[in-house]
Length: 342
Image (cartoon, rainbow, N blue to C red; front, side, top):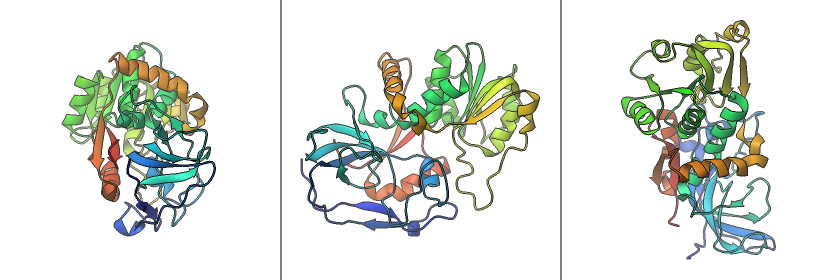
């Protein structure tokens, strides 16, 4: 495999106000350094583009340290080891980890921040290792099962239902015998959620009332709500929750680019009235159990009982524009950036 002499990278030039703009990025192409003992060099094949990346660009305290100004933008990805001076990984190994938005990752093979692990391309396409078998799949699996704790016969509502996390949440909930109602934007996405993924119904928030949709499709109320969007939709679902309902706070994509304070739920007293629970979840807390989730989801993918949809954009140079697709609702399924051929 040909190895370039330079490493194309996108670095964070400024902390965005609102949507990231071109001036918030610095493109650089430094020369690749010689490999030191214990190091390896990974050629990036695919990068995962996730809503959480917007939060990583902000300063201040969070569940993970922010990307430093001048630092390579954080991103998960899959790649191939092209050089190695470490016994942990051999040339030709396919790996997944914190590659960053760059053509090559280089460093100590046991670096805990990047946390590289071998993956098997024979189990699933590489893109799927960034979707159902990657961070979105682990978020869906552990967030639903450990935090949402759905039971057969209950009603589960999922926002962002056609997205990376939502599509897996809904399918797993169906396997558990739940009634599953998605919320998504646009007829095509709603049709996909119902006809391809097997949800019982989908509410199109762009072309109708979420409140009316919940009344129609959740006549017995909502037992579990898996929230990926926050804002008005979260507030509306809270008006329909049942006694002892569980609300999983996974994300709030509607709020990530606010230039004003984040909109909190004004209907939070519904939690009190219904003795309900709202709990945040961060997938990194479940890292010791990832293999459990991968094994189960891979089994379901293999037997065809769940599906995985990925939206692939090609070219590292297209990273800034591709990232914005997440916040404009333009991606359909898990958004992935293809950097190189495998």
